[in-house]
Image 1 (cartoon, rainbow, N blue to C red):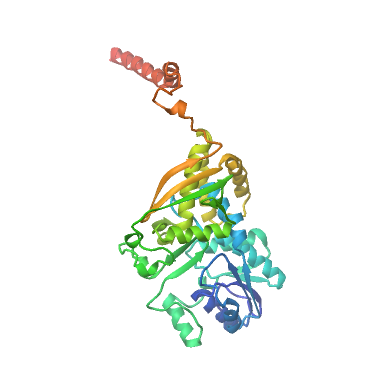
Image 2: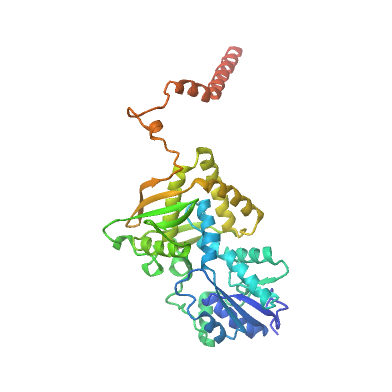
Length: 417
């Protein structure tokens, strides 16, 4: 009987395990059975990983799983999670499009559904004790099923490093792709890829090219720029170059097009939820392009007050996602505001891609608030310039009042002295 502190009472438990097939969860599936005699049910959510889930159920059964689920979540992920974040303009700390963070609540939801179906009393995930994902999974599961026990063996087991886990795999014939020569920890889905560990933990070292999975270096990207027209309806992208596309196909297409031009490489020192700073490498070619185009269309169609307030909400929305609060009432309240702002965010944006850079070429919308006759300085100008004097006087009245009062007070004090 195992006596691992923090994991007491798991003997013989039926556990639904969030299973990616990577190093941590492969070790976990084997280890939980060996240490506790647990029955393992693996749950693998397909969020658009290109390689990771090949043969995932077969691998789970080879590790002794009693049941294995491979669930296609791509459409739900794109439409109900990714596009909500896109409409919100959610970029954590101004850059990260939240690919991993957006996937966790959907995986947690799926984990709960399978756990109920398989009569599991425990769910498990492979997150560490100092990362963000532990909170995203824990909070996601408990928001939907507060009665389930949630465990993260990585927070408790004897392995102190990825190298220890790799050695354990070798001792127990557990097949994994990670090696001491290729120690990267990679999480991938439709919306982007996160890469960490290995040499990337040193912020003074530039990321090696072998760390990148889906973008070419801007240095070797094509010497000819490429233009693409993206059409939005109420904040949601629906067509490329005039051709309508469903959500998943559209994102995949943009990932390949933008990735070929070196678009979407991010190297961030970010603030994790637990309070430490971490160095993260992200690849998000399609997300980077869509956020850029969406933002440019909003500049054209949102009134000043809505646009400025939405920018504040965008930051809060990104932090909410990052911090694992997707299933909170606050996110639903934010969505109501955001959906209201997106009613007029329809139109087409033309963007040029060239060696890692994006350039806006054109934006059009039936809801455009740009009035050339008002903005022009040519003979077409219809703006009432004379009205500007009165406007300026009224607008600056508080400043004039403050200055007048201070001058008077200083005069009085000077005379008293």
